[in-house]
Length: 582
Image (cartoon, rainbow, N blue to C red; front, top):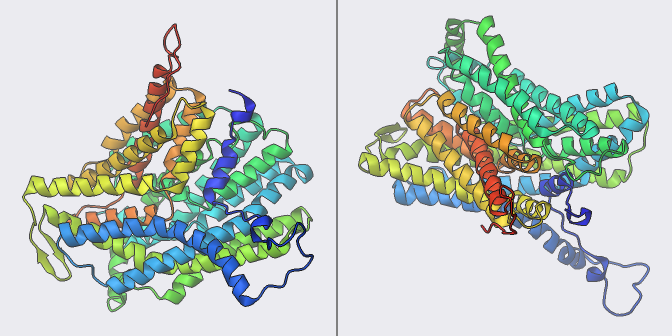
């Protein structure tokens, strides 16, 4: 492959995280002469006309990500499940807050937080030793986890778990919720350290996958033998999908690539590969270790008794989702401000550097904070409510359920109802993934990296199909109460086998592709849907859907990559140049 056709994956991921809209000066300057005036006076109407296209593009990006998914769930609920949308006005306002909040947050991320991270990454290796660099990467990994928009959905899930059925799962999501997020952050921090060292020393991804995934599966097998620890597995593996969002990937990646570039190791076309994979696996192990700690620290009876006392104390309090909007905004501010203070201290105290473009970065940080505050409100009142409501009603297609409005008899014969539920999961996974802007960018990158052998459309359809199958398997796991380990072990065994036979290039692409599908919209929606689904069926928990939605696209892309190589003649004595169309 020629160097000019190679696209650095790190650059791609940074572009994916926040899509730029560049407006050239020639498009804005008056076409009255060859030379633009030295000073331009803009009226209010001129400012409005200049900003409207800019803002509308960013608004439409989030609108296209939110509205089709929400509309699909609403129409399915009305026409297939024959149930009206409760509190439709509140949900609509919440979804509007999600769109506006994400629009502001993503712009703030691009203008403020990402330049901050990259500047620190470029400066660190020149002024401090490797040990300090890795410590900063570790702490940054923890900080960005608390700033992830989707982490709020994880915190909100705790009250849907019944302590009598899964006491330790309940404890992790309630009594140890802060420790849970911290452990997830520690997992991301370890991933940031190893990812940075990988950039510096050019380590391959395959050995790292074997060294992390195999122990995680072994620990999962152990958990499956313990009736108290087994319910934690779904939460642990779902945390891997929650962490690879729009904050973690670009900021940790910006730091790592900045360090590698400063060390003269950042020019490889593989720069940036693997960070999503590592940031997905290490949190899984961290949550399981926390589960073991809690298991040996407190008895199930103590957890149940504590939950009963708490339930009696707050008996008159509003439902789980009716949290004060003010509280949600405070939580949003707490997620971003400590991260900004940490980055500022590194820059001013440790590195003793002035912040370049301080005005622009300050503007971006303010946007990020305001956006996160608005998004948090929308997450609680819009995405979580809609996902939980739809998920709680889907079992009515084949099963009699109890709702706050009474008992709903099964709407269809059993097999017809199961088919409807499967169709819902398939369409939700396929459509949500195919509409993901990051997937389109990944497909174009893969097409360039493989010189057109692996077409963009082939990757997009394989990833979307993998997510659709994964979400469907997760739904079937809840319906038939299948232990998650019975699905994870064979799925990851297939993934590891395909990894062994695949090239390093396809392994990087495939294992990182799962992170592309877990955005700030799909994660809370799918998580709330699964929990509502499991709660309606009386299942122990509704976790595990995100876990299956992560491994299945990996298998799909690896299989497609091997097929592409086979069609291209790499496994024969006489190679043939054949492209794989989508």
